[in-house]
Image (cartoon, rainbow over all chains, first blue to last red; front, side, top):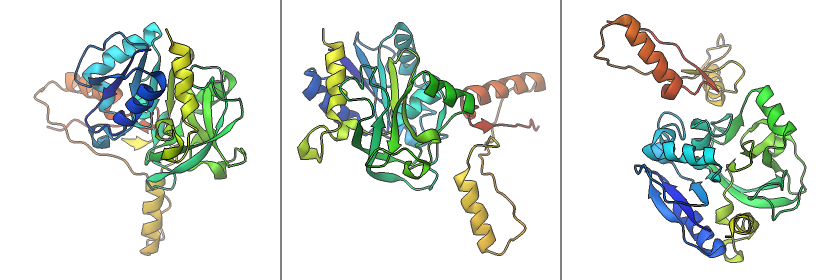
Length: 230
Length: 74
C-alpha cells in the first residue's frame, strides 16, 4: 500500500502519521509539500494535524487553497481515499470535500487530552477493524473542533450512516455533556458519501502502541492497511 | 464576516459576560466577527463588487457558518 502525507507550513503531526502508516502498513509514505502540484500515484492521501498557515483567517482556510489541494480534490473525485486528521479535517471542510465546519470550542480553550469515542460505523476502510458501538480512547488536541452544520446536513449524515465516531462517556453514553468541544450531536468524525474520505478531530496516530500510552488507534491503521493491501 | 444567527458564538458570549462584569448591563448580546480592509486597483464599482463578492464566497468567509457584508469606499 502506497500513501502520501501532505505537509503544509505549520503541519506538526505529519511525522506521527507517517510513522503509524510506515510501521503498520509496512510502507513509509511519500511526504508531499503543499506547494507541489503533483502527487505520486498512491492508494491513500493523508492531510495531517497541525496549524497550517498559523490558522490565519480560519483553521484550514488557507491550506484548502494550497496548490496541492487541486490535485487532492481531483484524486478524491476519482475515488482515492483521503484521510484528514484534526487540522486535516478542518482543511477538508474548508475545501468542500466534507460538509459542515469546525468552529471554536464551546469552552474557548485549547483542549489536549484523551477522550472516549464511540465507533458509529464500521463500514469503511478506516473503521472496519473496530466493532460497531465500540468505545475507544483517543487523544484530541485542538481549539477549533466544534463541528457545526445545518440541521438538514446533520440529519443526512446520521440517516446515511456517515457519522464515523462520536464523543461519548467512558461507558459509551452519548450526551451533550460528553462532547469536549460543543460539537453538534457529539460528532467527532464524518465520512463523505462514498466513505472514501474521512475527517476526524481525534488523533488515532498518537496511540498506536502501549509505549505511547495506549493502542486504541492501531486498528484504524490496520484497517487501512488491510483494505488497501495490494 | 460574522457567525450566522443560530451558530453558537462562544467568543461573543465571553465578551458579553466581560462587559456585564464591567457594569454594562444594557448589553443583551455580542457577536464577534472579522473586519478586513482590501486595497484594490480596480476603479469600476460594479467590477469591484463582483470581485469582492467572489473573494468572500471563495475564501474570506465560510458561508457554511458565516455571513458577510462589504462596502466599497473611494
